[in-house]
Amino acid sequence: MGKVILNISMSLDGFIAGPRIRDEEPMGDAGEKLHDWMFKGNTEGEANEFLAEFFENTGAYIMGKRTFELGLKPWGENPPFHAPCFVLTAEPGETIIKQGGTSYNFVTDGIERALERAREAAGTKDVIVMGGAGAAQQYLNAGLLDEIYIHLAHVLLGDGTRLFDRLTIQPADLEAIAVAAKPGVTHLKFRMKDYM
Image (cartoon, rainbow, N blue to C red):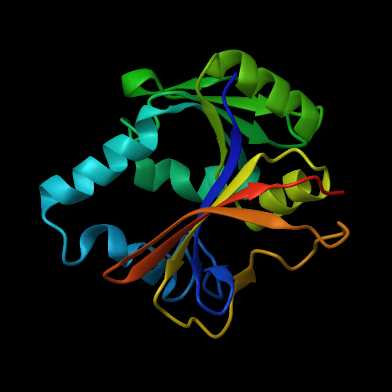
């Protein structure tokens, strides 16, 4: 069985999106700066290599409804996931099938059920919790994550959506398993120790 990993970009001041999230600015004002490191200064080959490595070991994704709604149009008909995505929502919906093996499956009966379905779909590969903040916080608070990967973008947004705003867990120790400084970003990988 693979791991359950929160994998997300964050600004140095703790934001995963800028202020005023809306359809025309799905990452909020200046929020796209959180992903500049993936593309700026990299050749197309380097960016594709990073993305291929990211997606290679992932068998399923979990996302919040708002992340899904804001991402559906930009991700297009051939989204990068190429795996089942499980959308946390209170509203049932028919599964949406896209090109390349991506499907959006709506889960109305809680985060544990979404994880159960994602693990079943992923088989031996990892399950990625990709956001937004609400989904990330729910999985952290429930003690359901094995690892946290933060791509710490070298930018200060000043305002927006904070990743760790609503945690209810007791203080938790993390074990650093990788740190890599690259132009525009520092990649941080942590293993969750016993927490709750």
